[in-house]
Image (cartoon, rainbow, N blue to C red; front, side):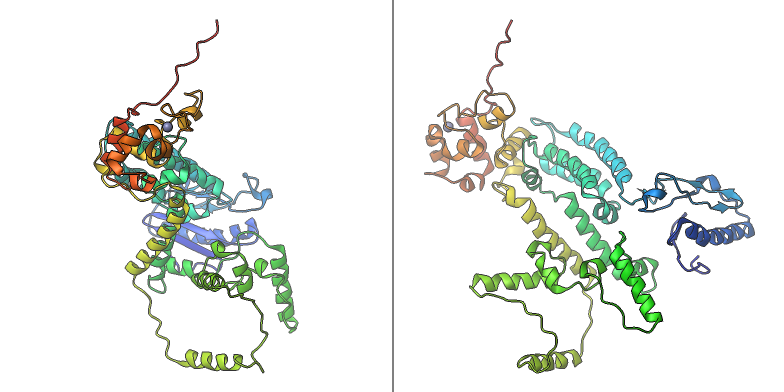
Length: 477
Ligand SMILES: [Zn+2]
């Protein structure tokens, strides 16, 4: 099928799903590119006596120009003499597209599907009965998150953050089902407790793996060609476009090319290092820049001041000449270009995402390390421990007060402000029960560091197994 495709037209073919894609400045140009292709497909079908079902074919215009959106401009294409229906939301290989590639429609459908499957998790456990959290987590990953994983490398990394947020909300609901945590629990702590990465990072991990897989395909594979293709920035940078026009004119007139307007607008593959570094340690996207930041950090910790100085050339500068000579020698040496194997690349991506997850979610968990024996507790015990671990337990008055079930947040035993940490480590009224289990003045780390049954025993011994709610105020007549 690749043979005979004109310039500017590419194709995507998987089993019996075919898509023809044309890329041009105007919709009319796209039509002009695509129609001859459709004509030759029509001729091929006639030759092989195949009747196409034109009613099942659709055409879509992808454009960021508001004048061309919402069906204002439709492609005008024909197959076998019949007009191809234009649609705004075509589905191709299970992904629903939209003219601006925001994936909002696809995400809405996906969220609805995830919500339907979440009900199965709901049927498996409540806060006092049902499956263990390990079983629920496995069921979530295999049955609910699997829906997200399909196409996540593209959808999860390209959809707008506000669109992705809707899916994150769906995962958070599932994490609450798995752990038994309540709605007041902080999202990051909740995900750390359920041992799940945020979906945005999961999408990054899948995209990284997919990229590594495609890079290892044979050189002429269409998917690899697509990966290595130079893509134009999606948004039009006027300064960039004007500069490109000036460059073409200068080339035609044999003048030296004009200066680029700004490194950011040009979006070159190698952005200015100084600008790149200015984005700070968290804003780095390449390993080299991240390493440089790490070195800078180490130097500044030792009290060394680092000044960046742009050196226009190495001529006449002591040391620089020597460095240049060494660099030249190194560059002339044999450069073995060995690619790491896919399994190593995959685990490297996994490790990198793992550290990102730790920085995002575990940092906000009061006690991120798991409590030994947590998975062996009964459902009510496991949920209660998770609630205490994340610091949002309905067994303490601060949470009952926030839920509107208690008039104040004072501890029922001592009158101090109540909290999970107060109950487990500080409340003087429970000192004896606490000392018997963990010794004198245990820290939260000592208590939640295990074993898990001790915490539950303690809660039972001090009689705090029920939410300390106040009776509702009598309604005035
Ligand atoms: Zn107290």
